[in-house]
Length: 468
Image 1 (tube, helix red, strand yellow):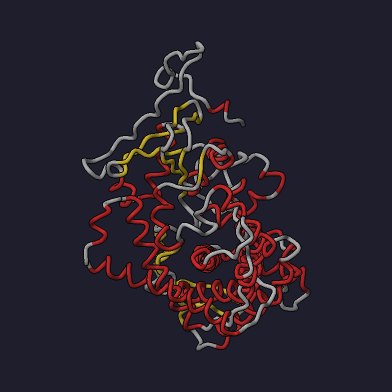
Image 2: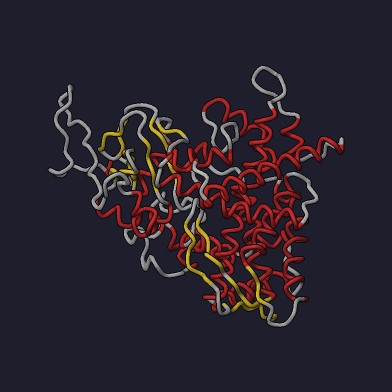
C-alpha cells in the first residue's frame, strides 16, 4: 500500500484545480462533536482512546480543534509511515510542548535537525545491536531478583505492579546505561514523580489553557513539586558521577565527554536533558509495558502456560538467561501483541515545516499533526479480530497480511527509538522469567483499566503471584 493509493478523489474531498491544472489538495474534514472554547479537547480528555479510534470513520486525515488551535489527525497506517519518514515534518506539537518542562529543549527526544543528529551519534553506540549482550548479566540479575523477592514474600502477598515494574525498569536502565548504584528509594521517587508529571502534561496537551496552569491550585502545586523532584534526581546522578572521578564505559561518560560541533564540551543543560531522556520516558514506557504484560499473564493463563513450556523446552529447566531470548518465539510474540493492544506510547505529534500534502489533503506550514498508535493498532481494517489477544498473529505466515505501518511500536526513520533492541530483550526476558515462576491472579481492589496520560498503562494493577 502506498501513500498515493490513500488519496481521496470523492466529491467531498476533491480540491479545486491548481495552477498546473491538477486538483489542488483538499481541506480535511472537521471532526464533529466540538464545544465552544475547548473544541475537541474535552472529548479527547474524557475518552481519548475511543475518540481517536473513531476518527478514521471520518477520513484518513481529519481536522480537530484543541482549544483555539487547529490540529490535523492522521488515521491511516500508510500515512503515519509517510509522516514519520518525511523531512517535511519535525518533532513538535502539543505532545512535545507539554513534555518540554520535563525533557527540556536540548535532549535527543525533543531536538531537531543538526542537534538531534549529533546527539544520536553520541548515544547510538550504547544501543548498537552488538552492545546489547553486554547488558545481559544486569538484565538477568534484576529480573531474577524480582522473581526471588516475590517468591520469598508472604504467601498470598499482593503485588503493587506499578511500583514493582518501575523498580525493575529504573534499576536496569540506571545500571546498564549510567552504571549507577540506583537505590530503591530513588526508584520509588521516580515512580511517584512520573505519575504526577505525566498526568499533568497530558492535561496541558489536550486542554491548552496556558495561564490557568500557573495558578496555585492543588493539582498545579503537585505537578510542580513532582517536576522539581525529577530534575533534582537527575542533578544528583550527574553530581555523584563527577564527584567520584570515575569514567566507566557507559552512556553517562559519553555525555560528559561529548563535544559540540565546534569541538567544545556540550553544555550542562544538554547533559541534564539527555540524562532525563534516558531515565524518564524510557523507564516510564518500559515499566508501563511490564505492567501490561503482567495483566496479560493474569488474564490469559493459557499463553502464560505456553511461555512456560517454551522456556523449559529451550532451557531444560535452568533459569532463563539473556542468551535464550532469541529462541523464545512465542514469548516474543506475547510481548509484541501486548504492545499492540496496550501501547505505552499511544499518541504522537509532529509539525509541518512547509506547506505540504498528505493523502491528498493540504497541510499548511506550521500545522500540528497528531496520530495514535493505539487507534492504528486497534483498527479492524488492519487486524482480524482486532480486539482479541492473539500472539500467533505475529507468526510469519500471518503477519505478512498486516499493513506495513500498522505496527511500529518504536517508530521509524530518524526518530526511531534507539533503545528498541534493548527494550525488547528486557521485556522478553522479564516475561519468560515471571511466567515460568508464577501464575498470576488479580485481587480485590485491582484496577486494570487503562490509565491514559502521556503514556498508557493499567490504572492500578494488583496481583497475587502464585509460585508454580
